[in-house]
Length: 453
Ligand code: PXG
Ligand code: PLP
Image (cartoon, rainbow, N blue to C red):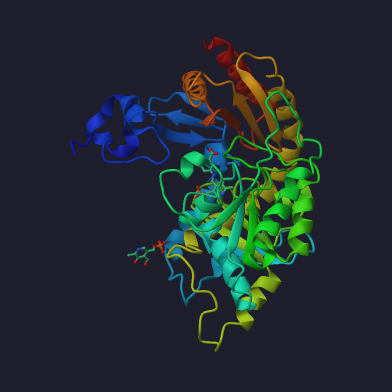
């Protein structure tokens, strides 16, 4: 409809008009606001986006938590071009190609030592990983002859993507309320400390939070519960860090009552926590571990579930004759060759540049910088872990989401991209950021908060 004259890669903002913007119904976006005031990026390099008019914008959320190694990495461009030229697509079902096996081996070698997390099921996204893990959990118990174990337990403020399974166990009301009946699920209480806590890293122990799982077991009986799914630290809800001992206690209770523990590591995995997994960073091993995002440095969509060998073996044992499938599940784009090639190259780049070490070195710097926001106007709480931070913003009466939006828009005008959601601002700078860039990001944020009425 009324296309601009130029090729789309060469557009300037003056070429873009509302008519042309109308066709794309954008995800998790205020479409009316965006189309009135488009915020379009045309290029990216390192830790910076470039707007269509060439303005540099610091990437304060690594895209959407997925571009830790920075943008425009030639190694990844080369890997995906080579794979696309050699084998662009290969049927995901009943046939294979080498890249997926290579990537699976490399992922498995980065799981916590001795964890038995060594079988990888690929998906195209984190949402698909969430639903895959929940289906795996139910089918696992069925394969073991315990088909009554179907109930799934998530957590308030949890985010597990947007598919029906994920929103059923998820605990963000805005993502659930429009969509009617989900699947049978219950929720543990969230672990967000009261405003004004300003804990650095993990909050002190608060055992009653994990013990709530015992109440749910009393209510439903473990014979009816398939799995508990939590993010090691919650990302989307505003970076909520588990209290000390919390994940350990969940693990103990799940083991004792024969309930699978699923970690959704779509954000915490592949570096953001300063380790390959949040499981390793927090010292707790789940039975199923979901990943996406950073695994390809965001350059291709890819997610998956890493299962313990016992889970895989159970499916194989119950699979019937060898020519039959053991798990009737998968996606057209499961283990897409180009996405797998991107994953292999991204993991290599993480090693080569010692991405984990960079996160571990920058994390204390980010912690000091963001906790310097204590006392700044409108700042109600600050939380951090690894290279992630969440800031709770004091709400305007009746409009909790308003001020974070205003702050993020003002930040964009100043050359910083930050994420806003609910009553929070979220930061997740690239692993390749410098301490000075983090200081500038947080200083701009402090200034912007002070400017707000
Ligand atoms: N699980 C977790 C823990 C996530 O953080 C998903 C599942 C879903 O992944 P996909 O690839 O289907 O989007 C996520 C994604 C934000 C933000 O700003 C977070 C996510 C996605 C977009 C924005 O907090 N998390
Ligand atoms: N809907 C229809 C009509 C399909 O044929 C398919 C896949 O073949 C799907 C949905 C699922 O798509 P995907 O495998 O990309 O999730």
